[in-house]
Length: 241
Image (tube, rainbow, N blue to C red; front, side, top):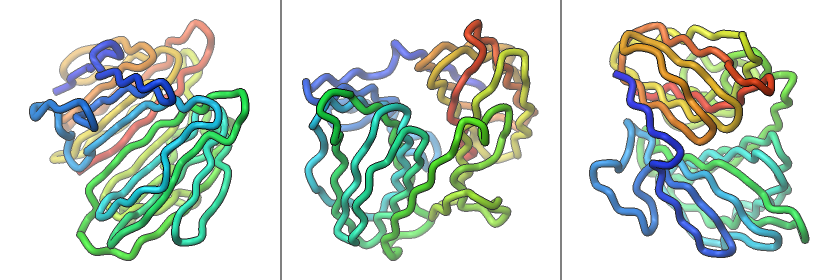
């Protein structure tokens, strides 16, 4: 089954200092019928204004993955990690038994746009960890290689996560196509950041525009084709138990 959620169907949260689009129940958006997709609890598309951000706050027993689309995001936590994450950076924070962190936009002029996804960990009470890595456009163009992985077949260069998921961040040129073989009893979550995609499976063919997402729970070969007139489509693909 493929369920497409359009960009307009997301919940919009506007607080002045931050603009967010929530794909699942989060903060002021409470919808019990849209609480999660497998172990994926949250997927937020955030834009922080200049010199704005989240003050230091706690988390526990969560796997938090962030991807900086544009601008710069400044991370600070109580494990001693302080860094500025440029566009193209993926950050994985395993909150485990507890971690305090802040995320801010250090720029005086430019906003920062970043995606954040929350996953349930494989088990509670794990040791907190933090890590990040930059993935260039060249390394991701027309390639389907995990940037985050918690599975035993973890490939070189992928950040580890305490859950049985793989996260991909491909850039697909127009006319290029991936075939992603879905395994039985697993789910696939796809979110289109920019450009246009055509996806197809047993349920038929669907056209995706920026901000659209697909929730797929089907054992089939998922066909993903770039259809952007501007030449490229960037998207997130998550393989979930």
